Length: 110
Image 1 (spheres, rainbow, N blue to C red):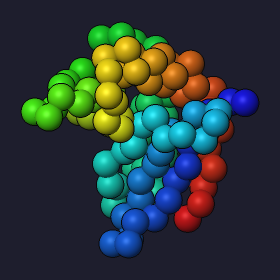
Image 2 (spheres, rainbow, N blue to C red):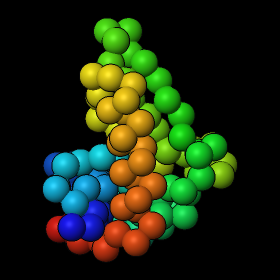
Image 3 (cartoon, one colour):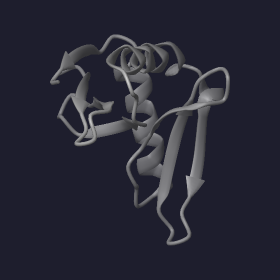
Image 4 (cartoon, rainbow, N blue to C red):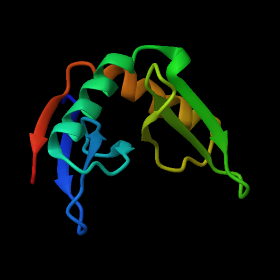
């Protein structure tokens, strides 16, 4: 089953998206956007940048968890991952974004 983007409205009225894997796990979450159009631009930016290894930033939290973020060409973060217990799991998350994002359909749940 293919991955997909879900666009939702936050309680403050702003928009955000999640990239979901084929098994419906969230693998990337956006920041908040003030307009739906800006949110959709963020989705398109993920699709465009997902295959570029140089766009991923990996980090380790002070408590030993692993994360990644995907950045646009201008260096701005487009989306961030969940916390992973191992570096291997984080690497799998990045591969899932690369595989699922470029052709993922968009589900507007607003």
